[in-house]
Amino acid sequence: MAVGVAVVSMQSAFDDGALKRPAWAVIALILATALPLAFRRVRPVAVFAVTLAAAVGSVLVFESFQVLGALIALYTVARYCDRTTSLGAVGAGVVASVIPAVAKGSEDPLLAAVAGAGFVVVWAAGRRAGSREAELRAAHEAAAHAAELERARIARELHDVISHNVSVMVVQAAAGQDVFDSHPERAREALGAIEFAGREALGELRRLLSVVREPDGDARGELRAPQPGLGRLPALADQVRSAGLDVRLDLDYPERSLPPGIDLSVFRVVQEALTNVLKHADASAAEVEIRQTGSRLELCVTDDGSGRAREGNGAAGRGVAGMRERVQLLGGRFTAGPRPEGGFAIHASIPLDGAPR
Image 1 (cartoon, rainbow, N blue to C red):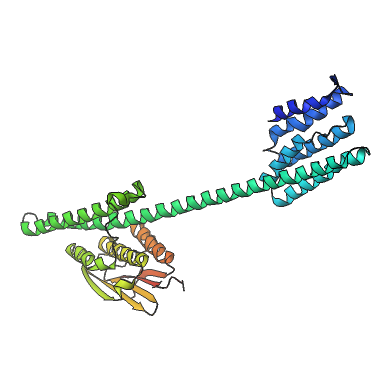
Image 2: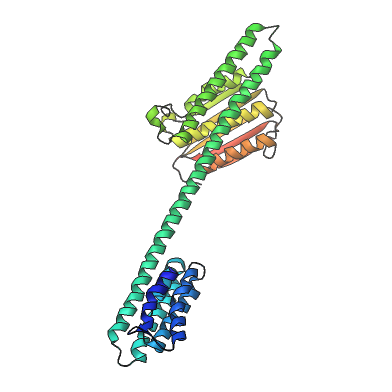
């Protein structure tokens, strides 16, 4: 661009086939209006200042307003610089456009008006392009942020599915091995529980991975299976009981009126809480209590174990952090810690109207 502007502008250096005088000044000024454009992205304000000064100099030296380079430089300033800087630049351009009429009394004043209008039009075009770029950049950042949130959501789902089902499978496998010779029928029951947990994990993993693989995967029927919700708590409790933990459910809430997001998230919190009890608490019994109190859903999961499944303890700590994040995303409150009478408790209070309190 810089070389092209220099070639075009160099036509003004000749008058009736002869180079205007002083030749060195004419050539230097024309090159100064064009060649700095090579650096307009790096130093837009400096390039505009140099090209505008050279354009004014060309009027004073050989009576030719070489404004093309300055217009291009002004467009760059308006597009990439802040509003205050660009306003100062267009103001300087409009003032400079008056110089030919002032310096040469015989010069047609229309030239100054046309040059000034050119500066204003170019500035407006640059500002518009800059605004569109800013909007696109903001949209891309928002899309990247949304993708990051979706990756985090899928990671939480994968953690919940794998952690719970694999924990059940490990416990059942250990139990089956203990009674394999003495009570083969109980070993067969453990193998059946392992098969059920494995099939459930595979089903949920297939559903999650279909979302990652094809956003419109419903066309294949892969997304038609319903998301797990609190309606599956009895089955979840039976699965955990088969692993040796006595689970008691105390449920008092209008299941059908729960928003889908709360239904899924509360199920995942209960699932993760029971998984932590199974893996880390050395407990024999756990209780899940869910009640609706006014416009809030109250969840409490307690156990009679050692109280070791707390934040900071490796995998258990990550599980508690994941539960807290789920609840906070719903605008709720979450607490977890050992109970004074022994064992561990998690408590979540979630607004059903979506308003955090």
